[in-house]
Length: 103
Image (cartoon, rainbow, N blue to C red):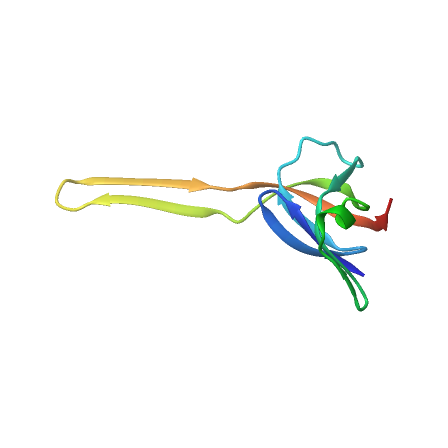
C-alpha cells in the first residue's frame, strides 16, 4: 500500500517505513505528525475521491532537522566592477512514515 501526500507545498509518494525530507515543521524530535492524503493505492483499489480520502490518515514520526545542499548565487554586472556572492541552505525536517490507515 502506498499513498501520495501533500507535504510542504509538494506531493510525495510514500509507503510504510519510508524516510523523506519535508519543509521545516514546528515539531520536536519524536513527535507524531499527520499529512493529508491526495491519493491512496491499495493493490488494485485506487482511492481518489475527497470523501473517501477523509477516511485515511498518514502518520509520521519526526526524526530531526537537516539542511539541504548549498546553493551558490552570483550577481555580476558588466563593466561596473559589481560582483556579489551569496549562499543558501534550505532547512528541512526528516520524517519516517509510520502508518497509512483508515480511521
